[in-house]
Image 1 (cartoon, one colour):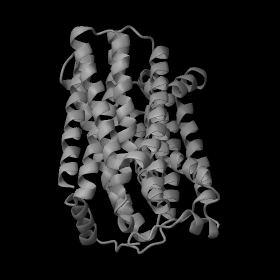
Image 2 (image 1 turned 60 degrees about the horizontal axis):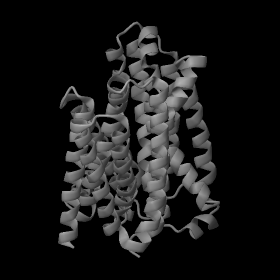
Image 3 (image 1 turned 180 degrees about the vertical axis):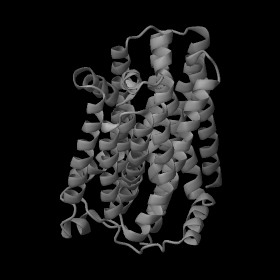
Length: 405
């Protein structure tokens, strides 16, 4: 087999992978590190601003800086892991992330906090991007799709539950305790990674030089097997981040929710994504990736259009919630299956493929958040427009793949 992927049996023989459940649990922890470090802070931004004696608007730059470094760093980490393996980049990433967490927890002013967030982002990008590459090392085909679905559930649970966790930590221990928590989380995850997985990239190593890296990325960009599913997933992820960023304005400012009710709303979304991830693992073996992804895209587009219509004709919570649930159901199907489809053909350069996909996803997220904040002062209407445009664009792009095949 050209990909020469390592099988679970081979890894077990090497003493690296005790069980599939343990593999998935560790990969989920790697994938969730970045979103946990971002969303856990949301309830504490006002308190952080007061403590550091800056405005709330200024302290939100701690989120922006983290995401920027997180996105760009993936382009570097992926090729490094293809050349030197996964183990040392992951462990180094965890160490850097822990150092950044300590720095943030001790920061006495905004520049100090931003410095710590830059360090955190540089570490988190390694764990996040390599979770997908390691999954590609260990699994292929339907097994990879199932693994990505379960990892997606963890990534959805992190932004869903972390605002509630952050609010509780802030209330009882102060905002600095949030950085202590995520630092401890990273340390435990690093120990688990070393114990359960270790090195998984046992195929041919790709040379590390600028020309080879550029050639790898260019080769991926012009390869329809990567380009179409990766672009599809990135658009859907952009829509998801737009929803998370706009939800506080929609629910608190528009529908008079309390912060606790907002946290419960985020937590509730996890159940929808969880159900979609389980459904994705059932759909892919029965109907194939193409048909399953197209079905998810139609669901995402239907929910998005419904949200736009609700914002115009009946901007109340229950219809809005119904549209959100349908969108999340579609998103939860498309994201893991599309990710698996984008990575499956590229076992020899899974790190580069995962890095480029992660970069596109974060860029899509940044654009989605920006559009949702600028298209209109009416948050629900702006969100509906962004979701509709992203979902329909993703559906149109993916339909071209089906026609080409």
